Amino acid sequence: MARSTVERYHAAAIQTSFANPKTRDEIPSRVARMIAMAEQTVAGYAPFFDVRLVAFPEFAHAAPVYFTVDELLEHLAVEIPNDHTDAYARFAKKTGCFVQTGTFIERDVRYPGAVFNTTCLIGPDGIMAKYRKVNPWIPWEVHASPHDIPDYTDELFPVADTEIGKIGCAICYDWLFPESIRQLAFNGAEVLVRISAYMDPWGASAPMDWWTTINRARAIENTAFVLACNQGASFEGYPPFSWPGGSMGIDFDGRILAQADAGAGEKVVVFPIDLAALRDARERRRGHDMRAHYRAEAHPYATTPRLARAGTGAIDIAMNDLRTAAAKRTLYEGA
Image (tube, rainbow, N blue to C red):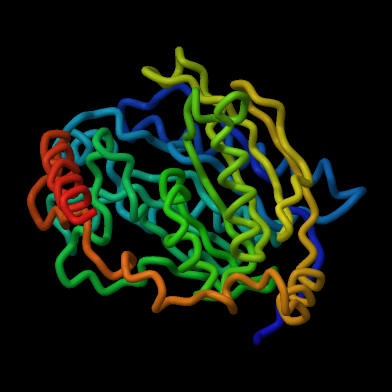
């Protein structure tokens, strides 16, 4: 196993609270604000510890506020890399900090007619990994999953091997699929980053509190640190939902090391990551090592297709409903 050169550092979840952008022309001001927040975080905590990893929430650059792919392509979609990722790379080079960006609505000339919900891990040398949301929030999200694309060849669950450890990221609804996060862990991830726009009532407060429950469970299941950054926008800024924040850091035993108070607004929460302790636990444990104890052959459901691929056609809400209905029929008829 490759070893990072920095085994102990702090990570920061940086919540944003922007109004919902209608065009890509509004993205630069958001990027400038996020870089300023990251610079202040790194400098402000420097007397106490080194912040080497920061994460921003889903939709920090742009949300899929239009109901059609054509509108998203016209108004919000950008290619990656772009001027914004270049700006993050300059920040990373200046500070030595790694950035898990908020999501972009991404277009790719290889897949005309599709848009993706995409985040990048950016380090001092530029983009290290690009993750496209595998599980869009159906029916409302009409961007494509890589799973929808015939002959898609890029890694669905990339893990970046960096000097601060092996980092994997998945977006919001992805985390309600244990298989997706486990795949990152089986791909080697030691730090799992969740960037989210997790709305009420499934947010960070009782009686639901899915946010905290799922984040802790995924840390435990995969013996991994979790850096989880949630959207902090108000209902006024991002209707039709309110966004409760509650960003958090969790250790590999599921302990909450730090958490922002629930509620909208810009907030920063920092917590320690100790890769040496994580690696010792992964190597030492004979009990509670769920990856080593996983019995793949005992779970045939994982090889049975459910939700059909969307294919190359434009995705819309009606298509998402039809695919879901078809999956439900096969699910319950086969039960």
